[in-house]
Amino acid sequence: MTDHHEQVADGPSHAAPLTEDTFPHHQQVVQRFGDLAPDGTISTVALSRLFEHPRVGLRLPRFGKLTADGGFTPYQILFVSQRVERLTAFGRVGSTVRVGTGVRAIGRSSYTYGQGMFVDERLVATAEATVVLADGSGPIALPDELLADLAELRLPGTGAPAASKPEPRRRERQYYPATATVHSRVGDVDVNRHVNYIAQLGWYDEAIASHAHRLLGDDAARKLPRYLPWRYHVNYLGEVLHPRSYDIGIAVTGHDEHTVRYELGLFDGGQCLGTADAAAPRGGLSAAALADGRLTS
Image 1 (cartoon, one colour):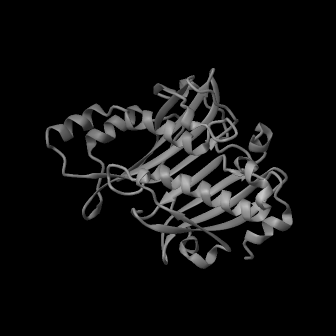
Image 2 (tube, helix red, strand yellow; image 1 turned 30 degrees about the vertical axis):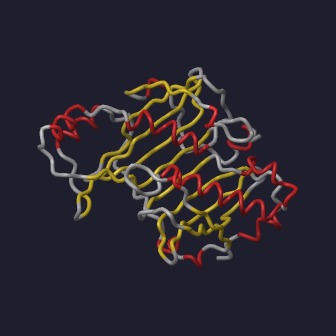
Image 3 (cartoon, one colour; image 1 turned 135 degrees about the horizontal axis):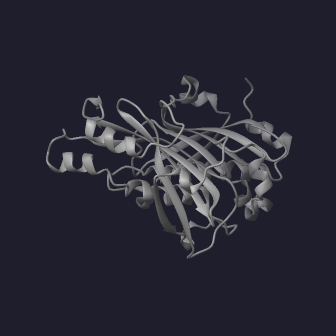
């Protein structure tokens, strides 16, 4: 089981504590049995799913009326990046968590949600998600009605959105010293007929578990949940389809007594479809073992 001290050693993403009152919108979400990792705590992938429900259900009344009246051109909402971080281990089937949701940043054609998850008024996880409005020719400007809705959900102390595109070298397969292969499943496909972004997050879990298993050997198989990330920052760069097999490049970028930091890339042949940065418990991974996937430059 991942201990709390292992997670805070690398520091949380937010410098100042968040409270429920920080957020303009609140919703309760029930923890399910399927949300639990093998160690009995809520997994980071499940956190992403729990954060999704309040975000997708958020009401944007002016924009909703505009689209219902046919006053806005056909558009798509593209999910381009997410951050999710578990600040402490928790989980109990059937109990509820409270999720606060607001808008952290607004750009010309994109906006970023900010969220916090609370158990008994205690902050246990945070998330961000950036979406882009686009049509067949690319990103389109956010309409005034949507801007007005988003302004009412603005979180305090927020500014312009920060660029989140990965460095060009992260899109090159040779950048990553180790590789794991993943296979799409029917259950990974959503209503848009591509592999869902949460399913892709699970693939990065699979890649890190596979890498840890190679380093630790078969005797460690039952302990692998200890090595799954508690923090992700993911960029979604291209459409991921089914049925298909993909390679995930894995690089260890650093470690301390408690934490290992990974960089990952999702590839279809030579094309990079996504990148992820992750922080995971070090557990029993030795410095010599970690050197097997360490970047050399």
